Figure 1: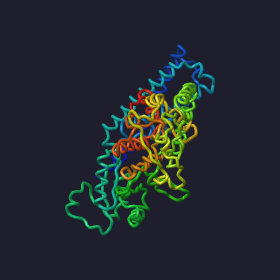
Figure 2: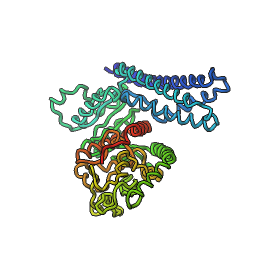
Figure 3: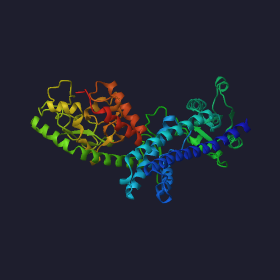
Length: 492
């Protein structure tokens, strides 16, 4: 058994390195090949050496962008969607950098848009084809790509982790042994059901070296210091990787992350999955697109403002108080679509600004009544604005100000958050990111009036899925879907 495990372990490491090199090389070939073809198409001939400076600097920039977006860190544990998404994400960033270089050197105006679009489409199809081929090749040879692991801890917990590893696929690791802490009583039936051998803790280090085990997984509770100390002490003389698999099944975790403050390690049990560089990217995306949209829509927004002002008495803009990032109260702008009578939900959506610490206090909220079909409070021009979502246009000013994003969970009325917290306790996790003008829930049909707890659960589930899966490419998809069919709504 030892020779077989050692061979598999070494072969797994070698083949994983070869796989990543193969994917990186194939990505570079298809992207740069497409760039060379469309450059030649633009010139009508093969580029001369002094004309090929873009091609010379393009390769290192592509490698940097693809590596930065994690496109080369392929494993068997990734789904085909992840293989493709990371590749296209790297390609999109490389295209942005390349266009910036062209315009910085004065070549952007001389580059035909058709050539750029043709290159981007052909390179995109090439990256998708390469990565699908790589994933299929890896799946066909997954037996040689397994990482071997030893499980240490309570037997029941180890069996559970073993089942999870097996169900997750070969890329997650293959258990080859289990180590039990001292003094644990074992039932004969449980021991006989094991598919891997049991070894003693004092033999763990020598076994790991002899069998070339890739990782030791300690299956213990966070507070089980004795077991952790015994395992780490036993393995001190051996260069073996040790990882903790804490039992957190009963905790309502969200995007757990390991951090460090100075020299103090911190386990963040409930946090936004977006890293600092992700926040920077998203902020740049928001500013560029919002300013562009406001410039393009300046005249239509002026016309809408005049129509609102002439259609009924009252202000042009209606200011709503909503929960923003981390529950902070923000002021969201909309074109007014209702009359200013006292029963208007726009007036009664909460006129008392919560003070620090009471943003979930019902006493700070006033009565809120959602709009219904054929609502008499909606003005004629307001009905048109609502039907085509034009009343949301002023929220791009919120995006520029930094209170909102273009894509993110839609901000609910604060009283709705209060009403549904008992039945949807994880609702406020939506506010780990800035609220958005559009979002995954909206393009999936979960928009407008909330009819009950089940409707709210579905919306929140889609919002949390967006937060977990966030990428620039996902934002592009949501924006494109909104532009194609997301503006029109038959909701009141």
